[in-house]
Amino acid sequence: MKTKPNLTFDKLFNISFGFFGVQIAYALQSANISRIFATLGADPHDLSYFWILPPLMGMVVQPLVGLFSDKTWTRFGRRIPYLFVGAFAAVVVMCLLPNAGSLGLTVGAAMIFGLISLMFLDTSINMAMQPFKMMVGDMVNEQQKAKAYSIQSFLCNAGSLMGYAFPFIFTAIGIANIAPEGEIPDSVKWSFYVGAAILILCVIYTTANVKEYDPKQMAEFQEAALATNDTKDAAQESAALKKRAVKVFVQVGIVQFFCWAAFMYMWTYTNGAIADTVWHTTDTASEGYQEAGNWVGILFAVQAVGSVLWATLLPMFKNIKVGYALSLVLGGIGFAMVPFMPDQYTLFVPYFLIGFAWAAMLAMPFTLVTNALEGSKYMGTFLGLFNCTICLPQIVAAALGGVVLTMLGSAQGNMLILAGVLLIVGALTVPFITTKK
Image (cartoon, rainbow, N blue to C red; front, side, top):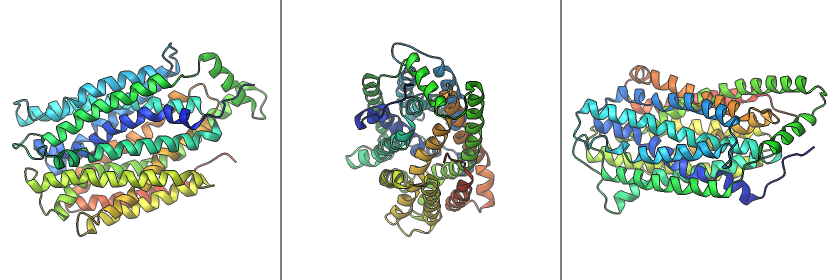
């Protein structure tokens, strides 16, 4: 029986390198969407509603990418065609979205243009992002998956670091960080333009350096995975595999619900929270609010640094669930600290801790689920469906955001305390995940 070989570090790296560029795009979106729509004129109580669209598109797109790519075999590969098309579309939309306020439209029309652009941006990012997770599932054996997803986590956070820092860097070199009321500053526009260029270059690199297994090889690997079990009946073993995979899918999905709801509130309310507590302003047209917007990128970059460093330690945990739960607890403590920090620099501490949770969220769930799926012909479909455990909690959190903000006294900092509580609750559910002995 032919089993998946161990891959060298450079092959594992090449499989995920394009994720670096995709994550730059995702980082620019997550750090700047609230800033963009607040600048266009959105009320803070309505900000979370703009965040419903991205996970909703992910919930639709990623299962479809998984389903169709499972059945796709071309000379360019199985997953790579979807990766390339998604990346190309993302590049086009990244050049459109930050210009929503510069086209001479009314406030309402500018927001609609921004929403449509956001919809297409998140659709394309999701289409480009999912194939990387699937390629690890397809090409990496069980013993190396934790390492492969940790490499992916490292590249993801390195891309995030760059994307988050772009507006601050461009402001530092003299590009305008303020604009007429209702328009997006040039520092944000150029961040999106440069991010788009890097994205397509990274995806071209992965496309040129990764050769996916062909249908015959994949069939041999799947047969070998099933043959390692004691059950002789292939149909019986396949049914047992599906049952085990669904069980792990649900258990990890419960943890995911609390984690991704927490991060949705971070992305939505960090800008307003620190503008209020550190810059003492809620005026979105003020210089202080836009400075806070730049600083959000720096804080998210600090989070990315924490994630990169913590990702190198996660594979050292002999018990994957211990590493997972500890990461979430430390991240929860970080969230709860944010509103109490006296200045912009002490905010580095909580966001560094938040990075620990982010590193675990990127690596651990997919390690647990793909290990449970080893030998399945439908890896892509399962992973596409598993993305719903990422998208659904964000949709729920965004839909309730305005109501919850009102209940918590309309102080955006309180939403970050709530995020901390959610992460700790997520950590308490980790021990219930079933793993292979």
